[in-house]
Image (cartoon, rainbow, N blue to C red):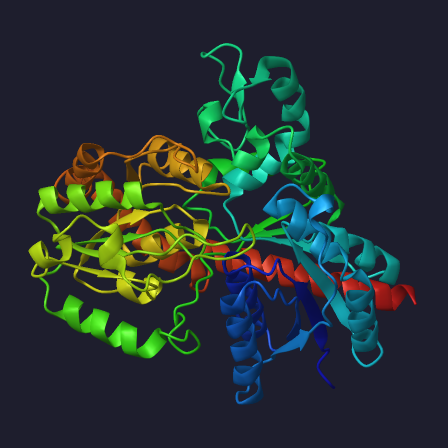
Amino acid sequence: MAMDKYEVVFISTPLIGNLVPTVEFAHHLTRHDPRFSATILIITVHERPIVNLYTQSLATAASHSQSHVNFIHLPTVQPPTPDQYQSSLGYTSLFIDKHKPHIKHAISTLASTTSVAAFFVDMFTTSMIDVAQDLGIPCYLFFASPASFLGFMLHLPALATQLAADFVDSHSGLIAPKDSAIELIVPTFSKSLPPSVLPSSVLKRNKDGYFWYLEHARRYTETMGIVVNTFLELEPHAIESLSISGLPPVYPVGPILDHAGASQWHPDGAQLHDSIMEWLDQQPPSSVVFLCFGSMGSLEGPQLREIAIGLERSGYRFLWSIREPPEGKLDLPGEYTNVEAVLPAGFLDRTAGLGLACGWVQQVRVLSHQAIGGFVSHCGWNSILESVWYGVPIATWPVYAEQQMNAFELVKELGLGVEIRLDYREGSDLVVAEELERGLRRLMDGEDEVKAKVREMKSKSRMALMENGSSCKSLASLIQEISGRIQGLKKDC
């Protein structure tokens, strides 16, 4: 008897932090159950050539492998005009929405030749739920951020009432509490949240980013289920609090990571990576602090100089990824042609035997090296999962998106990191050299309890994906739900 075959389709926000875990989950799903194959619909953003290089490499790799994951590059569309949006999230949401006709056509074409069992949207492609409903295809949400933040998004429409009543606009452009003692209750956090760790888009209530956060959050409950890149042992309170009536079932299936990294497709990949790894090979175990602020993270010159002073004073070995701030609102950080010009005079010479400053770096491969003893991170969720997988403690320095809330969870709820700042963002006061130096000493020489917890969570992260592990069982439940729903539809016919 022929085995039933199921096709699942994915659409991701065209950002590295969203796209990579989506692709890796598609591979994870199809490897786990040979009945499944996946098609990922690719949105092209001309202003982000690095993202486009990644997506082009995916199609090339798929054509030369036995993978059950395929890629369709959607036709390009005209981007929104500047008068139609006020924020990068507004631009992204409108731009994605313009792809509806192409996505509907792509899925309809697939459905004419195979059984499309599910359509996965992500946290910012929720307008495509309309396509799934039009075509009668079960729709699921793949959520690449933590369960704690999923809970915040689900709670945001209710929280909006409190934000309107208890907060006022401030000169910084961010809303501020009328009473400094106000804290927010979000069920997926065991502790109350200080308003200062909310995402900038939520704190800029008079901008369209706030509207789009609410709009996307409102649509999450229209899906059949929510797949989260986390695992039960990491976020037990958050995951348990999501198991309430009225919400779609939640499937924690992580940690889903790209262990190969970007060396195969990044233009500076192999050569730069080799020189960095050779340098790390010469350092003692757990002696190097690694500073990296993510695919979209960059800091201005005055802040870079404070970091340089703090690193030099601390005396720790370091590997520091420095990116040049983007030129436009929609651009990504680039590479300095002369990084020495933005650092204190003589810094690179004085620290030549102690540290290495570079541009783009293959983060996951660096974190896997035995020389790395600590990670100063922007606290993107992918980075947190990578650090947990390799047992590297984090010092928190959030920059954008939901990273302030991730930092709060990591330090205050999970005890897996040390604090440099929890609420840093564009426009914040500088993290001065002394503040960084204190954080580095706690990260590298103190906080033995944090290090022990990180080692324990490293083991749990790997066990979660093993047979009978929590995430393995959760994935099996998801597969049973998808296949069972399709079998039920066939019987109804």
